[in-house]
Image 1 (cartoon, rainbow, N blue to C red):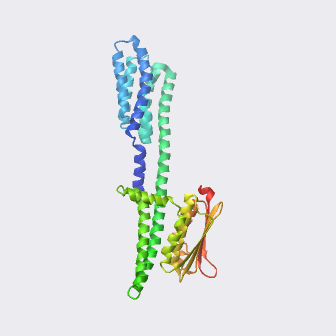
Image 2: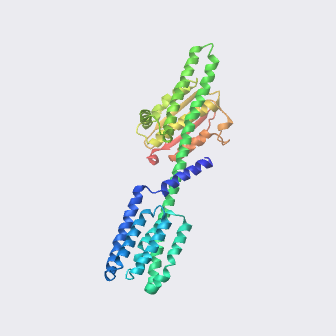
Length: 391
């Protein structure tokens, strides 16, 4: 994966988490505004009974705090400053309202700021709020300071807890993006490698017999067309998520095909290989219907990759057998050819993107894979895919 793709993925994840929808902003506003109006509004009403002239100013400041809360998700620093100053003025006008109550809106904004802004910015905001502690001491002594610092620190801590939750979600989304890209890469490799191998062999065969046996050349060209169309259909399905102008009817048809069993397509897959002149024998034991989707697709892709490796790497191979046996608890896939294996896919050589992909598919469903030369000639791929874990 390129660095630029990683950065774009991180930016996508960050935007998805950091930006609140208009509905979420309204919900946050209504919740915090309701709390301030209930708690501070009642306190101002009770404390203002003895200060009738100061009451209108205090009520106006409370309403100003409520209005400022509407923008706390977009500009928390500015809203915090407005609410802190207006809260202090309310407390100065009506000393019977506790400092903690008068600064309730500021504490709510501090919590929001701590949740959505970097740690350094939230620490500076916390320190600024703690500077009010001398006023709390003058009003309530050590107990007043303790209550003030406790409420401020709790508000900041709640925001940090929410921020940690967002970071965990961001990490999970980032991991999901990476896994999805890896899955698409494996699918594209499986489709393209198999199809191009068949196309190259068929094109070479058509060129060899084009003048002497035109009908055989036409058959090879038709096999190329069929394989290419099938590959294009699968690639469109894989990349559909990245396109906004796909034909809806075609997408529905491909989705319906993808929802069907993959193993029922084995004969179709074998026909594309037979068109190259390779004898392919397919044996299916047990019912392949109703298998877990992950096992069904993994078994098909393993057979596809094994046949592709036979076409590309098995020297002098003219026959390959495919056996799929489904029992009560697992599916066993065995693909054996009769060719001589080149070093490029030898397990000892450690190379071969196909074998790596097969091992990864088997690992994802909790199975096991064995691949290597067969005594007496040929190459064998044997996979065991448990159904219990995949379900």
